[in-house]
Image (tube, rainbow, N blue to C red):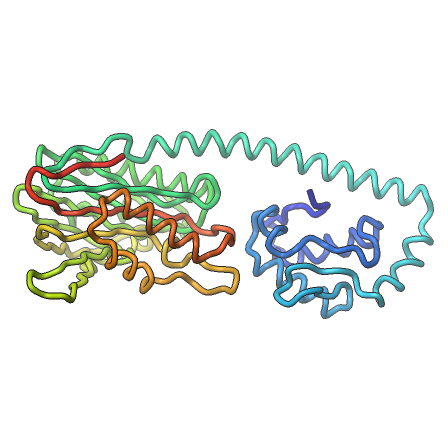
Length: 375
C-alpha cells in the first residue's frame, strides 16, 4: 500500500494538484528516499480510484518542477531526479530527530485512518452492490419466439447503468436501458429512483410511450440535482405482432441487425426516434418510434461503457468494433453473444482499469416456439 491518500474531489482543489502536494510532503518528511521508485501511474490510479490521466498529469508537472523524472515512456514508473536527491538530503537530515518522529507519527496516523476508512467504504460498497443487484431483473418472463438476455458490470461496485425487463402481458415485454450521469453511489441512487418511476408508470397501465418518457423526465428533474440526468431508452415489444414501439431519450441508439433473404449484406437499423436525455429540463416532448421485427433479427442495446472501453494507449474500442463482433456472430444465443462482446472488449483493453459501467441487452427473434429468456 502506498503512503499517498485518496484526493478529495469535492475540496475545490484540482485532484492532480492534491496529488502533487502529497508527493512533495512525503519527500520533505523522508517517506520517499532519493532515487526510490514511486508508484506506477496505473497501479496508483487504481488504488486511489482516480483517472490514470490525472496521475500522469501530476507526475508530468512534478517532473517539470524537477521533483521527479519519468523512468519509462508512458509514465509507468517514476523516480527522484539526482538533482532533487542532492537538494533534499541536507534539508531532511537537518531536521531534528524529534521533528522527524512527530512527522512520521502524523503520517502513520493518517495512513491508519485511511485504511480504516477504506475498510468501512468497502463494507458499505458491498452492501450497496447486493442491494443494486436485486434491482436488476431477477426473472426473465418467457416471451414467444424471443431469445433475450441482459448484463451489467459496474465500474465501482455500484453504478448508474440500468437495464430491465418488465412483463406487460402474456405476449408483451417492456425493455429498458439507461445511463445515469456520474458513477458510484450518487449515480446508483438516481438509477434506483429511475427504476421506481418506470415501474410505477408501467404498473399504471400507460401505453403512451411518449407520455411515459415525459413523465419520467419531469420526475427525474424534480428529484435530482442540476448536474444529474440520464440517457434512457424504453421499448415495448408485442410477440403476437413482433412490433417494437420505443422512445429514445438521448441514449446510444440500439442496433437491429437484419439479413434479407437471398442477400449477403446485412442491414443495420438504428433506433434513434425520441428526444433529449431525462432530467435536463423540466418540460420535454418526445416522439415514439416503431419497427416490426423479423425472424432472425438481432437487437442489441448498450451503454457507452461498452464502446468507450479504453486500452492503455488511450484508444477506444468503439462502435465499429462492436458492430463487427455482432455481425459476425449474430447466430449465437443471446447470453452467449453478451459473453462474447464482453470478452472481446476486455481483450481489447488489455487489462486497463474499467472506468465506466458496462451494460448490454441482446435479443434474437427466433422461429415460433423457440423463444427463451436467459437470466
